[in-house]
Amino acid sequence: MEISGTPINLCSKESRKIYQDWFNFADSDGDGRLTGNDAIKFFGMSDLPREDLKQVWAIADAKRQGFLGLQEFITAMQLVSLAQSGHTINQDLLIAEFDWDTLEPPSMQGLNEKITKKKSKLRSDSGNESKKLQPTRSSHWFTSSRSSKKIQLSSVTSIIDGLKTLYNQNLKPLETSYHFNNFASPLLTNSDFDAKPMVMLLGQYSTGKTTFIKHLLKSSYPGAHIGPEPTTDRFVVVTYGPDERSIPGNTIAVQADMPYSGLTAFGTAFLSKFECSQMPHPLLEHITLVDTPGVLSGEKQRTQRSYDFTGVTSWFAAKCDLILLLFDPHKLDVSDEFKRVIYSLRGHDDKIRVVLNKADQVDTQQLMRVYGALMWSLGKVLNTPEVTRVYIGSFNDRTSNEAIDGPIGRELFEKEHDDLIADLKDIPKKACDRRINEYVKRARAAKIHAYIIGHLKKEMPAMIGKAKAQQRLIDNLEDEFRKVQREFHLPAGDFPNVEHFREVLRGYNFDKFEKLKPQKVQAVDDMLGYDIPELLRSFKNPYD
Image (tube, rainbow, N blue to C red):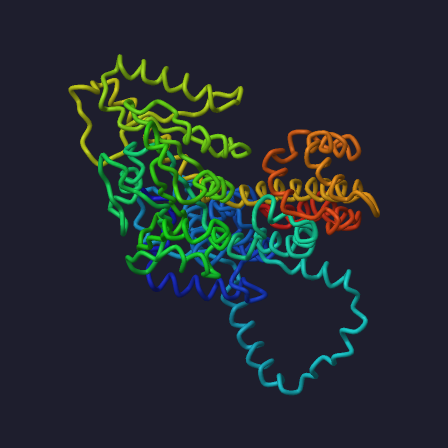
């Protein structure tokens, strides 16, 4: 499956060298990223209509990063060249049958003269470099902390960079003060923001999760095991790497450039059942796949796992961009463990897709009955008024059973297969939007958490009877939640799970909690109301 249709790999060496020179010229601050203002100046030399240039930017910046790297810049230049040749600019151009190797760079009015002028200026400037005065230390003494924060935010080069800055300045202090990381999810690191989009596969054993990944990659990944029994006994993160190898869980959890440090909270028992499989593959340059152990059913549930399986799936669900629940026609029952896993996915309903796999093992009439039974089973555990999207097909590399499928079944499977692949292709494009969505969701949860902790602290007596007061507050936690909701006019649906919150609270001394600091909450409100909208405006399509 090809996620990225960019023709950069088909660009000739001569053209690539020209594009590299152009990119260096257009990138005014030399940070390797072409932002909107630079693009408007540079693309204007093509003499194309504004509407065409708007389309060029939208297609080149497919991931909505708010800037163009070198690869995206080359894609943009090739689109400009095609537009100058009379082609209509649209997404289909990237997969059209062109001789990309011989495609000439576009005509840019006055560009060569400007590049020559800039190079001669740089040479003269370098000769005078030694004469420049260094700024004195005292020049920073009169810079207020307020203005320095604004400068820091205005100097970011992408939406993701902006979210990192806002998190460290506004949200992280609130989370740290009120122990949000111990109640919800660990503090975020830079690797959490920079991580590639993730797709997690969940289902009972032998529903085809590992085979599904093999089908996408067109090859097996290091450490993959496939069989009718529960073969995958660990969580496996399949990601891009220069060579094929498996990395143990304890090692991957402490790597600063990997977003898995939060998994250390589940202990060594889990980390020994976690590994990372790296391999060079074009699909894995854009997304990371998470293979999971088969969810147990029947008698097998009595053999408890040595780690919190539901907690781990919930942790991954918060990080993932898409969650695929796999069923097959002979395993439609939802076991107790699978029910707990699905319940743990609440709050991430928009990420869930259901796959009815191995559908070629039954004929068309049986498939109708199987589909109805599956929807009935899901209706009991997915408590949503909307119907969940179900993809029907046989996601493996075997040829379909025409005797069972018939022409109708085969056509249905092909359409469903194409729909699912299209859904997966959209993941990198929507990754930036998803990051913003998850960040805003986290900020609101942290704010409500701060209100709750501040309220519990306020309800504690000053001197006598602290232990009894704390126990009373824990026992009547639902009532305390309602008091917080009424006092601060908060939506009831945004409050955390009462039982989980109560369980974590038992390990704390309420007297040690911080009082509610309105300025910290206000900083988060300002971030949600002003900073994030301003950030999105700064990095939208410059031709909008």
